[in-house]
Image 1 (cartoon, rainbow, N blue to C red):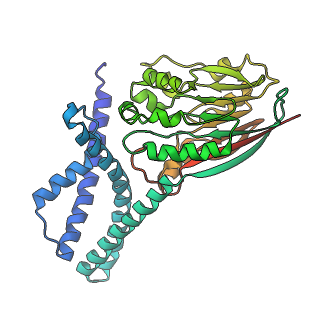
Image 2 (tube, rainbow, N blue to C red):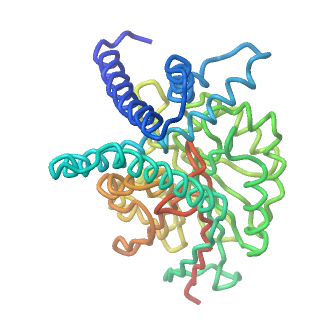
Image 3 (tube, helix red, strand yellow):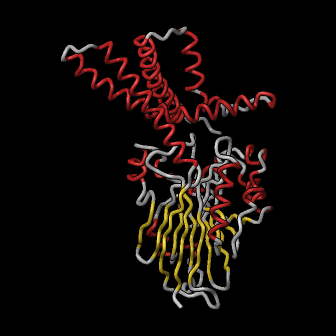
Length: 384
């Protein structure tokens, strides 16, 4: 890889900001300890706190086989701290702003530190509990749309189960995956579509825990199709992942289209990550579906929700995306809402129906605040 000084400087800057914020959080924690009279060894506290803070980064180091469980533990521990870091920073900022007012009116600062610090810790604990419940208790979202096209000799109404962003790995595993299988199979879907990020970077836990076996229990009348997300690319195991999916009857579409049931097209784009200089590129959506029979329904999967106008112009009837997680936890949804034309839910783009899922799994911690893990039940009514 070519040395890029700008990227190095950016990484140094981000690490400096991250470390500074964590020093701020750690200082608040020790101040609360002192205020309530909790005894601790400062050096030991900062060592343990540092391990937690950098656990997600450290857990990604390629440990020798005998130490891999330690690496997995650090990664999981560090992922949950990502949530504590973000929420804690905002809460402690509010505490300090309010503290200026207490100081200005000459209030009891020591008492304020005790109550304010306790309140912050209680709020974080409550949000961890609520966020965990939201993450592990998926809901089924129903969308019903009309497509003014017909499929000869096939039912006018199709039920399609859609689930994206599983992020199967060390945090999201077989237990959560079985929730998906149970709920999806109960729908008795005509078709199952998976718009990307089924695995979370590394394929190792996917293989170690034989997660493909659970995926292979999914059942639908007309098959199961998936596309790659950015995380399948990040892990560098896309080809091996595709092989594993093929073994259990799930076809991963790489800028490909398939015709099923004698007249319905399912098209799958490579992820936007494939446009990077180090990748193989991907077809423009018009190249992918522009030559298909436009009198037949076309369902397009594209992991990242971008360029809806191009998909509509090319003739897609339904576009299915994921990627955003709807920010996963507040206030991140404020950023995803600005970054994407649609970061979650439903949008009509000309004649095309767009649905963006908040995802079935989670990235980083299994925490959702302001979003839910979801499975989509898409009911399409075709004209007779």
